Amino acid sequence: MWATTIGAVAGPNLSGPSGSVADRLGIPELTGPFAIGTVGMVLAAAVIAVRLRPDPLLLAREAAAAEEPVAGPQAAPVSAASWRRTLAAVRDRPVLGWAVVGLAGGHAAMVGVMIMTPLHMEHGGADLRVIGFVVSIHV
Image (cartoon, rainbow, N blue to C red; front, side, top):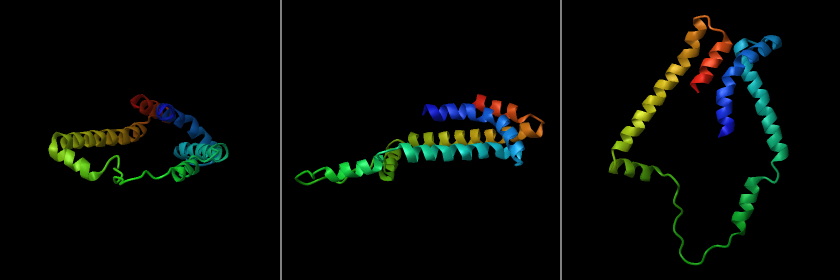
């Protein structure tokens, strides 16, 4: 969670320096963040591939296979969240449905504004570093 938060706040501030890197590589300035992000993802994948031993998935499978079945009738596993239970809760308390609609509408408005803000700033002549700073402050 912290890594995502730090990345979401610090990341937009790196758009200016990554634009300079893109210029030196001979690619468009706005592709700089994607180029740096690609390098970061490849490095992260390499670290995970080398350092994540033993594989947690294989350990979980071994642990599940080692468990002995419990004697007697077993209940069907209940999923943590099912559509049937969700719809039943909304039927019982309609305010939940309206809350979801309001939340989705609020997020849609925020996304729309935050998509247009950098474009509007760029058309107004704002530098890429300033645009990154504004997005970072918003986050």
